[in-house]
Structures are given as C-alpha cells and as structure tokens.
Length: 268
Image (cartoon, rainbow, N blue to C red; front, side, top):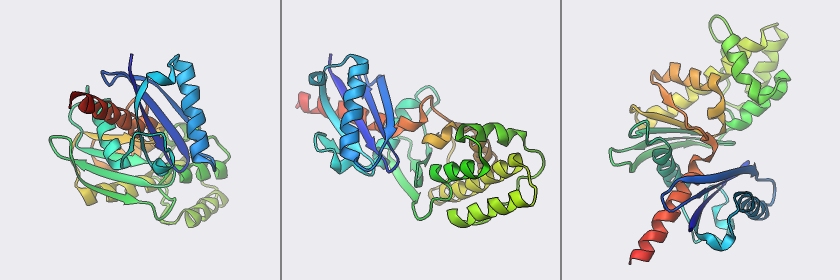
C-alpha cells in the first residue's frame, strides 16, 4: 500500500494527515509547534506512522504547507496554505456540495477564501495584524474568565438578551474591556457571547471583502466552538458547514495534493 502525507506547520500547532491512494483520510495528528518546528514535525510524523502501523517506506510523497513549510526539508514539495486549504475543504465537504466560501481561523490569523464553480481560488483576504479574532484571543479570553476554552460554547448558549459589545480591534485592549465588564458585574455568559459576536463581526467583514457565496465552510480549531459558529452564522446570514476534524483541513488538502502529484508523475 502507498500512502501520502500532508504536513501543515502552523504558528501554534502542527497538523499531519495521511491518505491512501483513493485520497481517503487514514489518520491524523495534532501537536504543539513549540519553538523547534522541524524537530516537532518530525517527531509527530514518526508517532503518527507508528500509531497507524505504516512503515515510513510506504510513504511515497509528502507535501508541506503552512507557516513553517520550508523548514520541513524531507517534503517532496511545499505549497501555499491557501491552496491546500481550498483542496482540503472540497475533499472534506464532498457530501455537502461545492464549497464556494471558506472561513479559516487559526491560532494567530484568520482568512476568507472565495472559490469558483470549479473549486479554483479566485480571491482571498487575510488578517494577521492582530490576535483579536483568532484562536489565541479565545485562549486569552478563557484564561481571563477562568474557564476552559472548551467551555466557551456552553456559556455562549446560556447568555440571554443582546450580546455585550466588545469594540476593541486589538487583543490587548479587548482583554482590558473584558476585565472591565467583569468589574461591572456582567455575567461570564454575556461576556462570552459578546466576544463571539465581536469575532464574528470581524470575520464577516473579511468574508465580504472576497464576496459572500453560499456553501460556506469553516475550519481551524475555533470551528469546534459551536457558540462561535452560531455567532458567525447569525452575522453572515448563511448556514455554515463544519467538518468532523476542522483543525486538519489544510494538512488534508496537502495530502490530497501529494497523492495527485505522485500519480501525475507516475503517469508521465
């Protein structure tokens, strides 16, 4: 059996996906990037292959993507995360229909990608200037509220009334706003809801820059937060498709491209 690997080396996490020759996802792994991207990517890949019972000689093609893609020198090629994200989204959402708009929220940036009817990237916009509106911001919010990140969704749906306004576009100032709201005896539920809607408003502005099309796909770790999904859907006015493993869409896309590249080379 031949296998294909996609490695997405992000600023906060390393995501690895393995597919077979039919582009089916065989397994995946997520680990912290840490300070030594290359070393941790190597270790994570070795651990994943061991868990799957795959000999490294059975891996015939590897594609790296993401922030640290050029650091993984064993890769047969490296590609833009925009391209890998688009391919992975289409593959992961086959049962949903043709994806036209992708929202990606990572650890330290957020993206909106627009695709044409054939699945080609026609436009994209990125916000990497501030942590507000990213996974890192949600981590900071949860820490200040003394709850777990995985609890944010539950608190969101317990909120009643109009979501509180978190107007700062800078993560540092937004953090100060949240502390101020706590000091004014606002509930954690209402603050969490306000945070989600503040992120949603920023994301919708980003999406509108590339053009809103139906069949919206949402990936990245924050897509596991149902409260944030709810806020974005309400602000956007569209239902959103979230895959089973939203964190690995880009690495999955890289693995699919690895399969395509190898089969193309074999045929030539």
